[in-house]
Amino acid sequence: MANLVIVYHSGYGHTQKQAEAVGEGVTTVSGTRVEVVAINAEGDLPDGGWEKLAAADCLIFGAPTYMGSVSWPFKKFADASSKPWFAQLWKDKLAAGFTNSASMNGDKLSTLHYLFTLAMQHSMIWAGAGMLPANSKAAQRNDLNYLGSFAGLMAQSPSDSTPDEGPLPGDLETAKTFGKRIAELARRWKASAA
Image 1 (tube, rainbow, N blue to C red):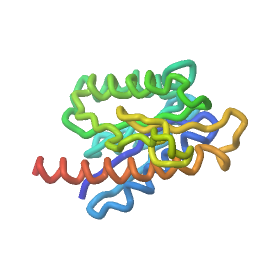
Image 2: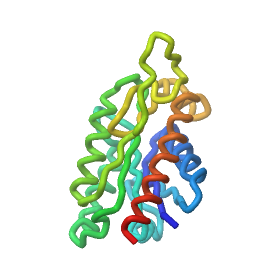
Image 3: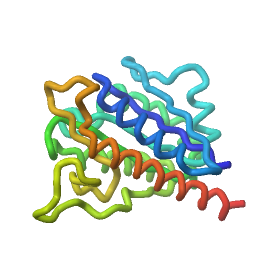
């Protein structure tokens, strides 16, 4: 059984909805288990959170894009991860990441690069989105991977939307597809390591 943990921060609920969709995709893959761990508004994990991350085979990081990077509570969590880094507790675990912002671009790639760099600091193995973009003339906003991300998962929620209104349905379906892909990779990764 591959154990995946989604660890994320959400400021207004949009990234939480994205995290839940990723988790839903993970649950479609037999031989996997997923836990969702929310970083609170002060940048702390719930009780037992660090232990869950240490026991995981795969960590999926998620943060909204604020001012071109991760939110400060996620950054506080990342800085606190220097303790597991020092012990190399996450070394050779599979890693992936996702982000959400109000604009179509909004420098989301900078956030994904931050998450990638965090994973590389921990000697993890990064997995990207693994899906082609919807970029033809016939493409519609709710097609899979309309935002065209390869490095990780991106979603867009209009700035005046509630979490019930955003991320948009296509981005949530993309999140489920992403979760399924990462779960399949985690299952294969765990099997090859056995």
